[in-house]
Image (tube, rainbow, N blue to C red; front, side, top):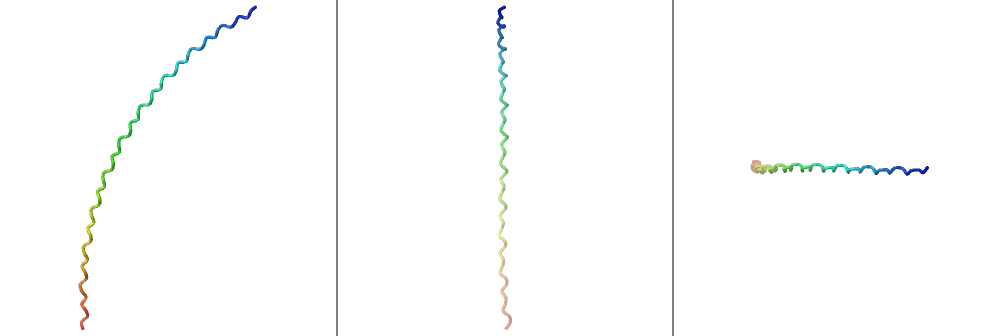
Length: 62
């Protein structure tokens, strides 16, 4: 007897593409880092008081 051709193979159902992946929420940039408070320059160093010259040495008595 003739061999009947096999029944047609239906193509598989279409594969739906996966749902779109939403991009991750935007990462906010970190809050700005304020610059450190200004460092005041140290108070001026006054120059040391003048050194008076030593009293004159009298020459020994004659």
